[in-house]
Image (tube, rainbow, N blue to C red; front, side, top):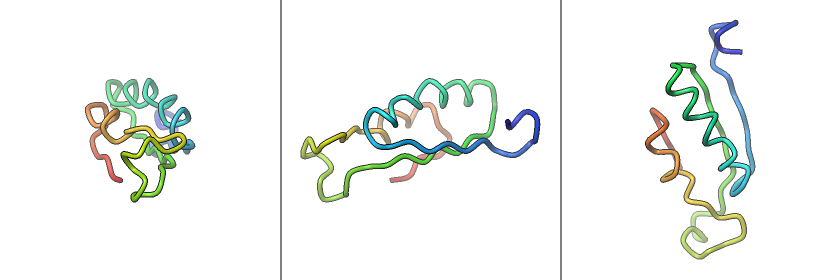
Length: 71
């Protein structure tokens, strides 16, 4: 999409396994210089680190394959 239109691609995923499924696409987009915005779900902040349902440290997982990463 981004190559054809010049606009960033946008994708949305749920937390946990949905977010981890984006890892390959994010790495590929970074290596190919393709603009991409990925929005994922996350457990509430107060539950981070408590092994909550579908909790994944997605910020840490994707930090090295993204230019910006926000929680």
